Image (cartoon, helix red, strand yellow):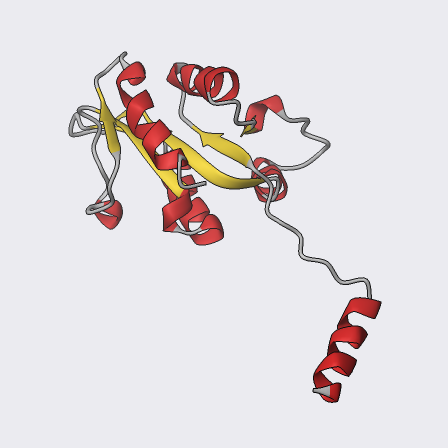
Length: 155
């Protein structure tokens, strides 16, 4: 017992503390403005602070450096997959940065802290088939708000 108390005292004397992860939600998106409705809903209705990369100062960083730095200020990501690109064989797909950020955020925060909002008709890459997502109709992202609220409740 004395050893335990001595060890505990030693740990506490070094001014160690547990730092809780930030509560901001990172919003990843393509070209369409649908993400703005998500940001407004999160901030005004659910009162959850958000971070959208283009709204943050560049400070001389590359986009990837900025993503790495700013994602440290969040603990959850909402990825909005809208049909912004058309392939040669006429498939509608999300921007490449959006697909990249799905994997990045799943690795950084864990799969249970990434919510995918998927526009109907947008191709889902084979490497993320099987992931659960919240569908919404083209130009109707409001249909995903209930599902998004349900996902965020566990935070």
